Each structure stands twice: as C-alpha cells, then as structure tokens.
Image (cartoon, rainbow, N blue to C red; front, side):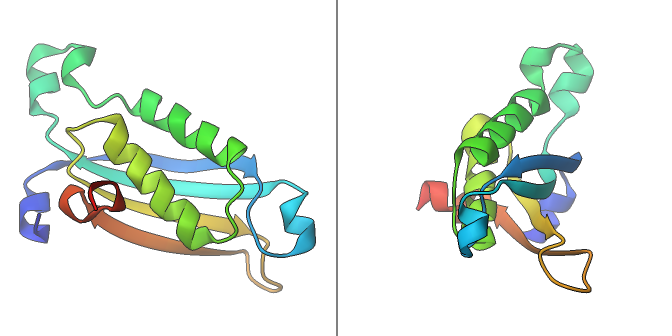
Length: 132
C-alpha cells in the first residue's frame, strides 16, 4: 500500500497508552517493570461502520488495545525495536481491515536528561512481519 492509498483511508488513534512491563538489556530492566508508552495510528476504512452504526462493521480498537496491553505485561523483549514490531503485528492480526499502522514505543526516563527515548515504525499489511 502506498502513502497515497493510505491517504484515502481513515485514521484510528490510540494515544498515550502507559503500561508497566519488562523491556531492556540492563540487569535491573530484566527484573523491574518500567513504564512503556505506546501511541498508535491505524489506517482503515471506517465508512461501513459509519453507515451501519454497528460494532461488527468497525475496527474494534478496544480489543486491539487489550491485546497490546496483555502483550506488554506478559512479554519480556530486550529491545524496543522488537516490541514495537510485535505490537504492529498484533494490530494486523487483530483485525483484517487494518491496512497500515504507525506505532511509537517509548521508555520514559530511560536516558539521563531526556524525558523519553523511543522508536516509531510505519508498516503496511503487505510489508509487515506477520505476512513475511
């Protein structure tokens, strides 16, 4: 999917999802949960749901968010790069109508003198690891 094609789709935003989980390479990060901040934009066609006004025609962002939370709480990746890729795959696996995802995962307070450090990735369904 091209950026032009994405422009024809609608955006669903999940903002400032703050979850505690294990993430990092340092010994203390492997045993002490820390805050992980997630922001996501999902591209999908919301017109069917707007027409019908039924949840069956909508991307269920509540279900997606619950799966993201569970993964962060239960997983123990070493790298932010891995976690952000796994979370994008969860979005695609959760609903076939999601055509593209932009996801940012941050570790607040991970670097001295910085409020946060994080990674943003943008994936289309065709280019996701889930389909590779």
